[in-house]
Figure 1 (tube, rainbow, N blue to C red):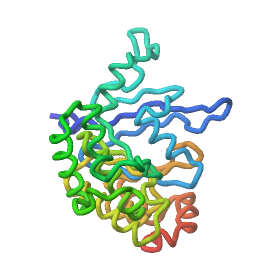
Figure 2: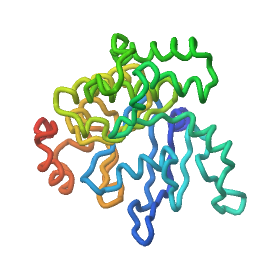
Figure 3: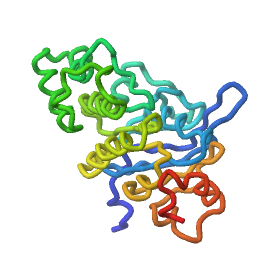
Length: 269
C-alpha cells in the first residue's frame, strides 16, 4: 500500500489562491495544506499578506482565484463540471464556516457584557441554547482559559491579556474544529503576551488544529509543527521548524529573523 494513501486528509487545503484589492495583487497563487490536529504558524514581514491569507481561510475575505477546502468541503466557491468557479449558497457557506473559529488582534468584546455574557451570547443567539445551558458551557470555556473567577467582570475590569483569553473562550464555545489566530498578542505587553501564548500552548497540547499568524518567533519555533513563511504575498518556505529554521537558512528568512531578535528569534541565530 502507498503510505501517502493512508495520510489523513488536511483540515484546510488551499490551491491556487490569489487575492487582489483593485489592481494590487496581495496574494499570488498560494498552495498550502493545514494538517489536522497540528499547529501551523504563518510568519513573514509586515505587509506580506499573512492576515489577508488567514481571513481568506475564514471567508472573511473572498479570494480572487483558487479554492479552499475545509475538511474536504469547499468554502465559498467550488468548481463545476466545466472547471468554472461557482459561488456556493449562503447557507452552505455558513455551514462550512462554522467549523472555523477566529481570534483577532483586537479583542472585540462587547463592553456592556461580562466575560460570561460575551462567551455565552453566541450560544444563545446562534445555537439557540437556553440561558442556563449557554452559561454552563461558557463557564467550561472560561475555566479552560483560566478565567472562571473573572466570569462576572466587564472588559474594562480586565487586563488586555484577560480580554484576549475571553475572546479565545468565546470562539471555542462554538466548538470549532479549527482555530485561526491573527497576531493575538500584537497589542499586549510581554507579561500579558505570555499568558495568552500559554493558553494557545494548552490548546495545541489538546490537539486543536490551529493556524497562527504571529511575530512571536520563539513560540513558532517551539510549538508549531509547520512553518509557512510569506514574503510579498508568496509562500516562500513551508516545512517543519527544523527544515525552515535549520542552517543553512534561506537568505530572505535570515534577513527577516535579524529584525526580530527581540521576538524570540535570538534562539535561532
